[in-house]
Image (cartoon, rainbow over all chains, first blue to last red; front, side, top):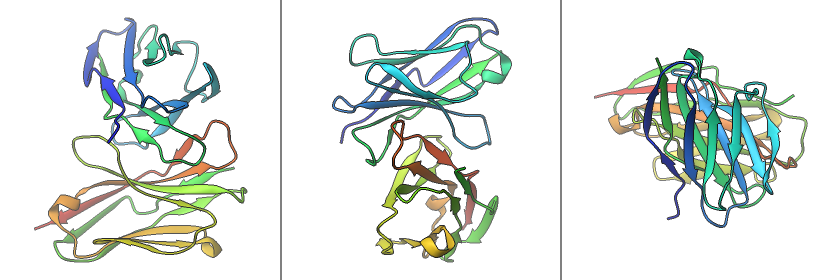
Length: 113
Length: 116
């Protein structure tokens, strides 16, 4: 069964450093997403990406965040200057078409120290 | 506004008991989708079921069953004869059917602990 692959599974970074989280969505999917889950809390939408541009972003997704699909296969989330409160599990997801079930990656646990 | 409420924060049962996890949603859309995900201690999100707003048939999959009632805006999940491996956080989620983004709105989650 096709999978969404996320790397790394766990990343530790110092406050103020830039971090890039990587995702390889399912190849024929058209919609791509990043979600965040702070420890013990619910999963929150960050951003959606369709047709090579952001289609929607949440209030959480401020100027410190950016997304890219640089080569038609990878989908990355960059945090320019990490803060302690960015520590969370970050999930990438992709979807083939409207209404189709999401496929989530296994997540990247980001720890900012 | 769209919202998903899982009023039960934590549930603890003894193995082989049946347990129902509640989910109530709010939306003004006529077309929408509802999901349940399981999050085991390892952290990944495991897809359990998707149901569209036009299909109110209840569904059963092994020990799992789902009761979708549009009249009460509820999509409850029942585990029959629970097992220790069912221990996890369970999330209900709502997807806006007509949105180009298709973002999921999650409930707060219900932590289920099944004791041996």
